[in-house]
Structure formats: structure tokens, C-alpha cells
Length: 468
Image 1 (cartoon, rainbow, N blue to C red):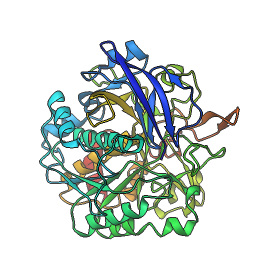
Image 2: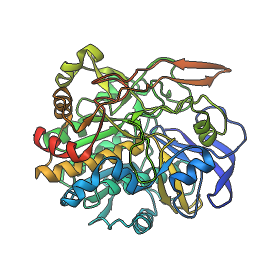
Image 3: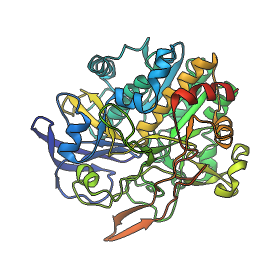
Image 4: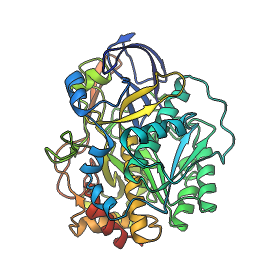
């Protein structure tokens, strides 16, 4: 986990920030004072440190920062969700499980503001449980604010995708930190949820580089929740990360200088969710096809996020596991993955030039609206899609990866292939600039986007029929 925290001075109609940086396990060297920028709350979430009293529109973000930002109606339109909603497919009767360290102390209030602002119905239920032990009292520090922001993003945006689904927020008492702490409590909490039949799809907006675990055996010992989920036909999703083909070492700030991959998205029993960039107008209509998310070399985005021209590693994770062999459902793409498990499996919106508006009011941050991006956005978005498919099928779908690859191989219209973009990243480290060459989008499966993204109106019934 990487956390940076900034003190804000706000001004203007779309409030911007002059920021003083105090970094804990931060994303590398940064100047002490930075213009409008982001807080790297977590490897899989980039939190744009810009607050406004009302949710900014695409036009406002583009005018003020030269980057796009989106609201729920636009994202719903982009994924063709109104067609499903009009037919009663809203996630009704399903439960989406959001797992986060610590959670958010204001999530009930903040989701209500989010829903009221955008005209969304309240979820049938929002339940918070702490099955791995009580969460310590909230303190406004880097770590707790980071996880609170993560939680708000996860809950608000999975609800936007499946407004009729129940939401179960599972909070754990220990922070997940690059495989060194936190995962045992996460596994315990998830097994409780699965064994007590509390949810249908689990969304995990966190991951740790495979190499940061003390040994392969220490990682493999943490798989019990996913084996349990498979046996109970619960779908498990995980974010693929936000550092492209690179990712951080156990110190949370030093990047590997060769391609690496993260877990649990690399687990064969988990669906790894990568990142796309949407190109939308103010109503959510596509102005260009989706592309692989990579803001590493985009100067306006880097200035908005980091306060410098870049490059900084901002791209969806993807690559080959060093732990897991190729699962049988990837046999059809062995020309791409070889003998290893490849990730991601599928991708959704994650670009910082196209982040989503979230609302938060917990202590330590100015209450208001913040653009957020990263595969922590993509993962709850896709969790909502899976809940819709569960409802359409009339039962849990369980491990959906075999169906994803079968649908892709068969040219299913609901799978939208992406053929532009890559996840190559560059970054300054130890006084030099380094580049980790990643993977390019290509027809069919690739290690930048998986099988592609979705047109949900077509994909949901396809997945409901293909997954068993």
C-alpha cells in the first residue's frame, strides 16, 4: 500500500488545491509544495486531490484541468446499462461484497449524498460487518483517510452500476501493505462471508506485487478464501494495479525495473480487472473506442495528478504470474501467456483522464466531491456488472473466467475488444529515469486489457448463459 497525504488550500468554483506533502510509504520523491495533484491512496486507486462543493462535470474538468471526469449517468450510458435497467435488471436480490481495510466512518452518509445528488435510489441495504475483529476508532491520518476514500469509491460506484443490489461492506482491522500485513485478516473475513452465505460477488480493490511476499508458500497459504469461494460459487474480483507493467517493492515506493504482476488478481480462482480509458461526451456517448488506460506520458494528467510533466507510472497492471501456471481456461490464449497465468482477464474504466466523481466527508478531508481513478474504480464497476448477470441468471455464477474466455473466443458481441494502447511505464528513481516495457493491446486477448471490456446490455445475458 502506498499512501501520501496533502494539506489543502481550496479556492475557486471548482476548488483546486495548493498542497504540502507529507508522505508515508509514498510514491517516491516529490517536491514539498505541489499544485493540483493526487493522493496515491493505494496501489489500485489514484485519488485526485481536488475538491468541489458540487460534482464537477466533464466540461468543468476539461476546462480547468485538461482532463475529463465523469458522473454516474455517463458511465451507465457508456456501458449500455439503461437498456438493462429498463428491463428490471438492476442487481435486485443480489449482494455485492466490498472488502476494505478499516472501511469509512461516513459511508452511510456519503452514499446518501451521492445517491441524492445523482438521482439514484438507495440500495435495498447497506450493511457493515467486521468479522475479523473490531476496527480501531477512526483517526484522521494517512492510512485511515486512504482506506476511507477507497471504501467510498468502492461502495458508491458499485451501487451506480447495480442500484438494486444489496451492499455488504466488510471491514478488516489491519491495513493491507504490499503482502506484509493485512491479508490474513482479509482471508478470515472473506471466509466468514462465504461460509455464512452472505454475498454473491466479492470486490477487492487491492493487490500486492507477487515478489513482495516472503515466499511463494506464504502467498499460497492465503488462497483458502478463494478455494472456499469457488466451492460456494461466489465470484471473486481483484484489481490489477495502477503502475502498468511495473509495481512497487515491499517498501511501497521503490519500483521494480522489470515487468511484474500482483496477487490476488493473478490467482486462477480470481478474475483480474484491468483498466481502460473511456472517451465520452457529456451524455456518456462514446466519441472514440475505448483504449487501454495509460496516463504515464500524458502531460496534462501528470500535472493534474502529480504537479509535474511526468512521466509517472499511471497505467493498468498486467503481465505474467511467477507463482501460477496457465489455467486451463487460458489454453486458448497460450500463444500470449505461454506456460504462466496471464492477467488481467477483463478491463473497465480506470483512467485518470476520465476519473469518476466521488463524495466524501470523513475527517481529514474537506467534505465534497473528488475525481478518482485507477483499477480500484474498474473493479467495483465490474462487480456491479456481475451482480446484474447473477440476477439475469437467477443464481450465482461463481468463477466466471472460463465463460469470459469462451465468450471472447466465440466472438460474443458483449465482449468489446480493444486494440490500442499499452501498459509500458516510465518513472524517475535514484536520480535516473527508467522504463519498464509492458504489453500492447492486440486483437483478442492481451496482457494489457485481457479479453477487452463490455457492452453490458449484451454481455450480461451472454455471461448469465455461459457461466454455470
